[in-house]
Length: 467
Image 1 (spheres, rainbow, N blue to C red):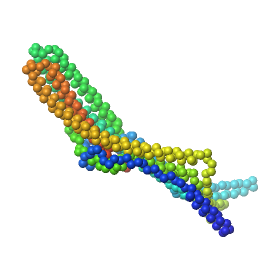
Image 2: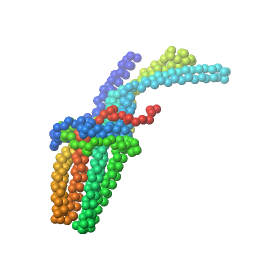
Image 3: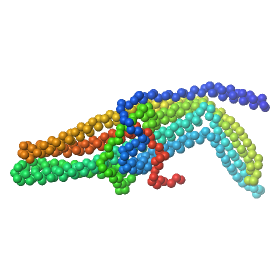
């Protein structure tokens, strides 16, 4: 008997050695390194994950904090993260033995009115010997998926902060433009009174009165449109922060638009790209796809499962645990013919890995483009704002001089009207350009900032209870 067991052990050892030689798990393909040596420009200010605080606006900080906690789309992304974490726990479960217990009680009565009771109990455990790393690869892939979902939440959160900031700045601009248009409307009405007085005195014709009346109505129409835009932006901001319009009033902000902070330091491109959540998510997808290639390949190799059980049967419940029968087993399963299903799954996993690598490299290229585009837009927008301010200064001088000539009768009113319209239009364009400069700065900070931690922004409102 001992000789027979030794022979079985020898054959098992040879079989395992032969199968180990069959293991040819494919080596992972490293994505190409695409980060440039340096970005084309950059400042000196430190880049923070909570980038919006560099704008020094308490009202904006309040809105963004509310959005990060209560925005419904971000909550849905968090729920997907929780799903991925649950899947990772499920896929990691086969690393541990599976233990089950069962019991049974029966009663049998014969024709002679004899009653027999029988009790039985069974406990069993099983565990797959993960020789080729199939279980580990599947569990690691699921864990990487969960990490990628966390990066997806961070990317969505950073995008949301940018949307809230831009909507808030557009709302501030609309309200400031409304105040500017009210001032311009008052100026135009005073000019209209003056023109009507001069018309009664016979100094100007009716055409001058009509032109000024047209300008008054044009300004009033622009004011109506600006008020409508302000309300639309308020509703949009309410949806972003996760509340209903009747419960939302934007926080008051003192002054006008905030000034753009110092330009951030773009740093080392490789480090910037590494901390971006969208790039990190794409890289985690590559690693998960690589683990799935290994898992698919291991599916084509033999499986060895170890098992053990304890069984007892007794005629009374008190005697059930007195005399257990134990069994230890080992089983080997080897896939032979499956119509090419496992090989096809391996090919599919390899193709999925190539997809993930290309997606990762494209995310790197997109990230580089976004940073460079934001840097270029920052410089061009500053130049444009400087030009608009100079145009406004010159327009004010032109209007003053033409008004002086008009009062002396040296020119007609059409020149005054053109100068007045030009000056008022430039005032509104300067305001819009200031907002666009802030919007470009938001984009630049967002492209450089790292990801937020989902654990710092759990939903604050009441959630459905866990069952």
